[in-house]
Image 1 (cartoon, rainbow, N blue to C red):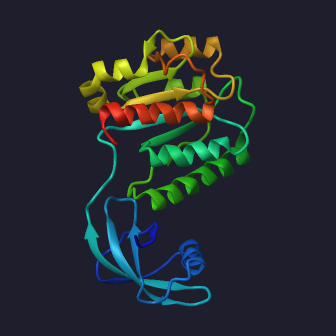
Image 2 (cartoon, one colour):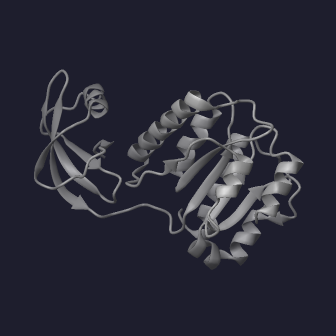
Length: 248
């Protein structure tokens, strides 16, 4: 498969495009030579076949070819509201969530989080996570980039949540409903409305936070008797939804 690159500019067939610096570095690492194929996408849908027309020490130019409208998005939209995990766990789960088709990511500052982000530091992490999303889309074949929202506190996010955001679910060890059983029973409705999935950080959501979420329409769901780590929980939910609602 030709390498894929995201470019933040509208692509048009039969044009020569100077590639951005980040893509130039990647092209150089891959040791691509003029005439070799690549795929470019601009996040607006579909992709373009292209060839490397020219490359130098600090520049590269691609010849943009025809548009391919093929997409590999899920047939429904999933927003992952994730309590911020420590270390490199957040990076890993964002990358894998993109591969599993997540449509948007909301990092949440919750009571039991081991990482505290605010101000400029939170903005830098958001930009870092968005860059990870781009790289994951380049790797997995997605042409539409999921958005990473600014870090928010749980009460703040709940207060601004769109009433039509979709079926609201939170993973909880105290849940009496299984995620898979509910997804099977309400499959058509979830596909039509989309899903908002709330996952706590290490240690999970506190009972007070679960009560707050429940008061805002979130249904507690379970993946079974085992307690999953935060970096596994959301991905397991996304995989289950892929299996039941479509995507695999």
